[in-house]
Image 1 (tube, rainbow over the protein chains, first blue to last red):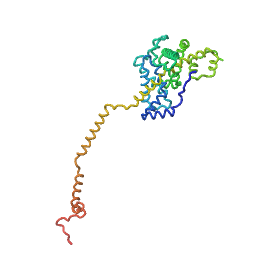
Image 2 (cartoon, rainbow over the protein chains, first blue to last red):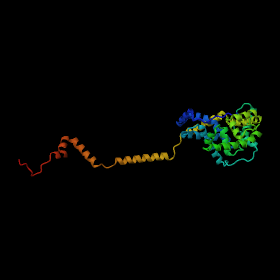
Image 3 (tube, rainbow over the protein chains, first blue to last red):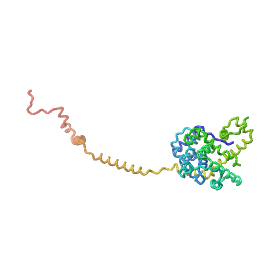
Image 4 (tube, rainbow over the protein chains, first blue to last red):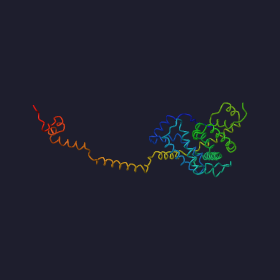
Length: 201
Length: 144
């Protein structure tokens, strides 16, 4: 069963302390704060940006926005939905700049050249066979997510890869209704379901 | 025991670890649903491999920190405003220093000079003494 972290807790003492230190310009605190939400930023950017987009540059820009924005952060809840919101908005800006946001692929076929192009991160597994399977898994996942309209993809990624709860997803999407999040999630699962059943080994 | 396989809503709850007892019982007894859940778990697990190697993560993090916390360069108008403020302050100070002396300043200077030369004469010759002991006008003599 997929393990899901919960984000319903208020901002932790650790986060609060780090925020104060970052506001004073302490570099070590800034690194530690980023480390807490680093995986979220990488996964959101990786899932929402198209192949060929520089994910490293995007993540770095998101991190800079987080550190600059945290100086005026007044939220009561955990930073996670707020960080996710910055990442989602940054990805939207990049896609808008490239006029890709309205593009929704209609075909369900998987472009294998595309699979190769999206494998930008080196596999860290020393076993070559397992590393290859992991790469293929990631490529299939990216290809499957490309089947979703952008908003459904955002909701799915925030729920299952950023591990936000429904309320957190709603916050990350700019305060939309939780019911709207549920609807998008329902549609995303329905759309992905045949793909997962047929194409996933 | 229900016989329908899991719906999308139930699937979402299962994948998020929030499943209710009825659904859990069905999944435990249903090989079709178990098979589907395994595929979903493999699908989602692929997302956990989206992280680059630790060196790349560390480099990107450090560059972001350096970029975010470096001192911002002064805006073009800040030195200009500072120079204007200095010019204004110097101008005001100069004007204040050159202001004409008032009557009070002139009188006080004369008093200081007089007192410095002969304090007794100054007291005797002062307007104060004349007021206290008024001079007798000429032609008005005492009859006694």
